[in-house]
Image 1 (cartoon, rainbow, N blue to C red):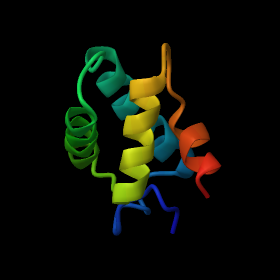
Image 2: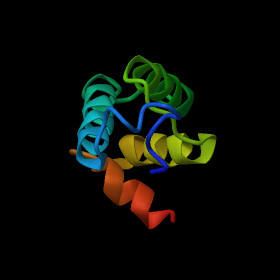
Image 3: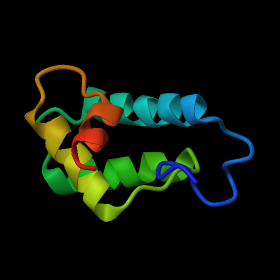
Length: 85
């Protein structure tokens, strides 16, 4: 199973669908989290992932939250997560 897909959801979403959904969550959080604390960014990522029926490890959420906080533009989720694997 792909690490970005929630158990039981793999049959309905392709890797591309999952990647696009994950990127949409990251884009949404990035768009309104400018200046927010890391805890807020991580909480919003978790909320968005839950709404999208996706799961990530706490470590991956922390990496994305750090990237969002450090970025002065768009964060590409797959790039951030592939750097950590």
